Length: 416
Ligand SMILES: Nc1ncnc2c1ncn2[C@@H]1O[C@H](COP(=O)(O)OP(=O)(O)OP(=O)(O)O)[C@@H](O)[C@H]1O
Ligand SMILES: [Mg+2]
Figure 1 (cartoon, rainbow, N blue to C red):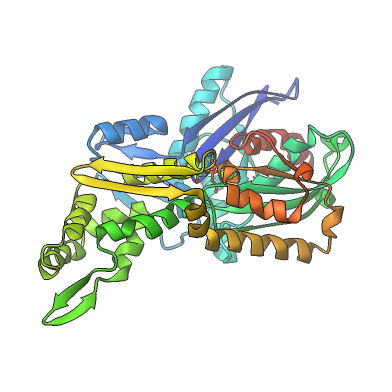
Figure 2 (cartoon, rainbow, N blue to C red):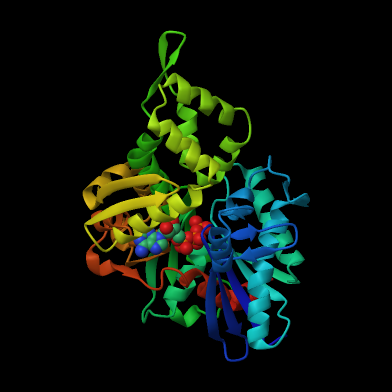
């Protein structure tokens, strides 16, 4: 047995690696990176914060890839060409895992080949796609140099971490609110059992929905910003007034898709719409947004406004690039209205999840929430409706899953 193993939480927005010393059974270090890759040209690519910096300082030229995790279950995605080179989903995920592994290997001074990888409870509702995602994730880890690979559900990992902090056995609901998914697990926790090998019967139920913090950003774009780019305008089609196609504005809500508007025939149509709307300035702004690849920067501004609303009641969202001069005020009350549908979906799922478990809600002793989006007030309010304040606990929103994954090692190894 080697001295170290890693727990890796490969997330939609952030990827985190935790180093576990298998002799002392302690976590020695945890670090994270944005799950972003920037291909600057044929030879150069960057990962994480470096990727974002280089992309922005290079005038958004080249290809920036984000939310790579969402490619894993997409069976229609076989590969993409980047500067003439073919990349599969595995290849892209591998670049991030390899980057984290190299840094960690340097820290511990050995080539660590064992890893516990997190996976969401539901990659896809479609079983075949879910299995494909899992297979691709394992292949990516193998390609990155790992030889022994275990998979663990992300919220179960968070549960194992929370277990370290409890004195008496308790039934706990774990909620993990990420960028792309929200996952729940009901677990019977007991610190005395934390190194026991068979904990299967303690994991009572797991489930998840494809709604996460990134959906809140898309909702802000839809409710507050698409109007600046012509949503709601009509154009003159041979004397008949028609609405601009709504799919253009839906696409703007997923910045990765914006690049596709630039290609294809739609870009040419935008020039026509500009004429047919009597040179409406909003269409000109839309062309600038697309032509100057401003989608990523705009979404960074939106995300920051959302994050600020986790600690203040009002934000002013400004975006001033390439002559796009956007200003919007966003109050917490506005934001709560904007994300209501997503929050309702989460609440509906959670209520059903608890009901289907057959467990009385009062029997749930505590709730442990983690993930970046758990800071959102509306998310917290879902729990506050169901549980007393003193039952709701949180730890490190970004590192809990990776640390719990590393700690799952003894349990998983025993089961192997
Ligand atoms: N303080 C905050 N307030 C509100 N939202 C936040 C805050 N900090 C981060 N977020 C949001 O949390 C999400 C990222 O959370 P996290 O890092 O847990 O996700 P992830 O693990 O990468 O995704 P997933 O688990 O879905 O694969 C993003 O949508 C981000 O904007
Ligand atoms: Mg996560």
